[in-house]
Length: 396
Length: 157
Ligand SMILES: Nc1ncnc2c1ncn2[C@@H]1O[C@H](COP(=O)(O)OP(=O)(O)O)[C@@H](O)[C@H]1O
Ligand SMILES: [Mg+2]
Ligand SMILES: [Zn+2]
Ligand SMILES: [Zn+2]
Image: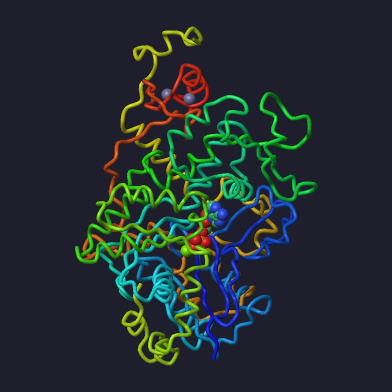
């Protein structure tokens, strides 16, 4: 019997057998204007030589699985002979779902896993619960932790007390990596170059040059300086997908502060965009989303917890999801939470080695847990009891 | 400094159309909705109608027999209808207004207690002024000029 762990994110699937390792695969399909006969699925993205103007077909909308045709195509590909060669009759799957997943999506999930693919057993769970499991596994003396999961569609803040998800403390900020990339696309297109069709390229720009400011108004001042004094400014060489396969920042010593470059490279000049874009995670109201930012929401969520637990949450803040990779993210969360918290409380913010795969690692540990057998629903159980048994056992 | 570039007339609320607050709110909503979009360009297959027919369709509802030929019939197929709902439809179907305890709607972060910050709609730096016509923020006369020429009342998005 093998365990397959699938953290089924709206942007990428983090997937692998528990005994092996994890792979990060795009959880979507693509169409390219250069190959007009084919729809590419998941990691077939690598076959597209010129991904400019790449067209995305995503299974998720606002973080919830709505397009099952696309999701099945991706899963067929992942489970099939090209990739994981799943022997369904001999495999248990651990699969993640968003918080407060709609009941009809949950039922569709049961049907597809048990009736269509016919997995031997399944455990459906929130990615944050896997992260909490991973955290308590390594920090067995801690009683509580509060998980920040900042991914593609949104950011969740979820307190866990031991194994228990504290539902009253769950908070969702409607800012995720997708919004950041689209916002960056929008402001670049307005200020310098039309890139609205270049989600793939600009997403890479975001990951390469954006950072979380430690002192927003100081960085604003620096970005207003002229010439070499402006240490925020970067010139990003866009890929042309022939000579330049991947975009990159011009080394500082090659930057031309005064005029245009003589080379034919296409350059984006990034200045306040570098920190103003990730700033949305800390001040969503900057673009008109009237919601708290991450540190304020963390403190607010902890304040809703029983008083005796609160100190335990403040010292176990765990950052997960792709946005946690922005340079400066952890430090900023720490400083703001520290400033909003009474001094007698210890504040500690943990950024795992791999914040994207942290839930997957938790799923792996869970599948190796002696209690795992009790936690799953087997196909037999499902065939006998239907959705009911899944509702009983799974905590979504 | 560059004050002379902008004529007094263009700043006079009596001369320029002024958008009402409902229109301003609609604009903001549309801008935020645009940030949720998966693509801004057209599907590269859409311009090939003949070809597209033979390829998997995603958003349109397929003719069942056309689908049946291409893909082996799976047990889930009779749930088709449920498999085709968009986010809004699913949310309404959940009917959270009657549900007890925390749910998707109640979990949304509250408004921040910190004061709103304002940034120039043109250059992104902090702004101290508001466009009289549309309510957009700007930081200097130059940015206001750009704003009038490019967006403001011209902007339909
Ligand atoms: N190094 C990075 N810096 C900033 N953002 C990143 C980085 N790597 C990935 N991301 C962003 O993280 C998001 C995906 O995070 P992930 O937690 O895998 O999301 P999901 O689970 O929703 O699929 C994407 O928007 C991606 O652009
Ligand atoms: Mg995720
Ligand atoms: Zn300005
Ligand atoms: Zn205006």
